[in-house]
Image (cartoon, rainbow, N blue to C red; front, top):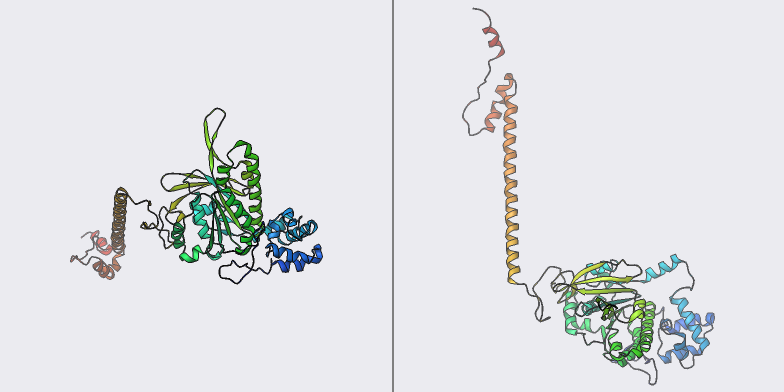
Length: 463
């Protein structure tokens, strides 16, 4: 339970020792008291501002980078001049100088940015090799049953992994607008990555916002929850669902787009200020050309959504549990594709995955997912034949090796015999023993085939 201040548009968080109260995580580098004390003289921030900000529910100075000057100026006892000073102090402290060298800006940004795995190595490679980046807005769009929600659920688990295991080690906020969140399915994914059920689910904060008014309330409270939890990942699945349901009339399109733009702007500021990843799924609609001919689907939300995303991923359903993800738009990633599987334990490079985390194909746990793919008897038969052929090929290879070794030994024996027979006759007696050792089965003695030179010479003399 979170304690809020009444009649406050930003639902103020108070620090209490109650077990049911959400306690603010105090960060020495971003604590509002330390921030005001450090910047009060330089930026002309009055002492009354600290009490006003804490009374409004701002305990982390990074929230000042999330709110606009107008929103801060609406806080009681905070003037427009003070609001401007607070925003400038926050920007200089957390974003760096307004004008800075490209090398300094790049180094500052890269040192801050972190990554976490998606659960699929090929998907991680598609995103640059390290997985989902922080300080970024990632849009995942596609038709139904293409793996958008499964990707979000897997990321909700992997983001909680320690940094040395490919995660962020931080909590997750999950805003569900389509009633597709299943805690039971998360347990299978968590078991794959070594999480206990309580440990996993206690670090995921879920908001059911199937109507737009619930989504508005969640967004209004989001800055408070962000500074209280310091989440590594914020998921909205899906962003456009409540807007499409309630702004379906053409004359309300401008109002709808304005609300979407405000929401996306807040999410982007949160992502940068708190070094958080924001993932939202998006629906698609058929794109009908002027000729009435069907053209491939396109994401909803128009240009407001398209321009807001740092990485735009389009997903497509292939055969069976196979899915394809493609980078549709990103300033630093090429438009490449990656194929992965939807499994009983999240997205993976393997069609089935054991719940101990190994990549080998294992038996399916029917308790986790009732509609899992079971291996057909025909496939089992094909596997047996394949294994038999492999065994036969291995045996033949072994036989060839043995035959080759025997042939080499025979060649060696013949060569040794030839060398002995080519010795001079004077050395024949000394080499007789070597010949007998080679031909152990023969009892025949070796006799010289030619006469000695002295005998031949005598035969030519006349009698």
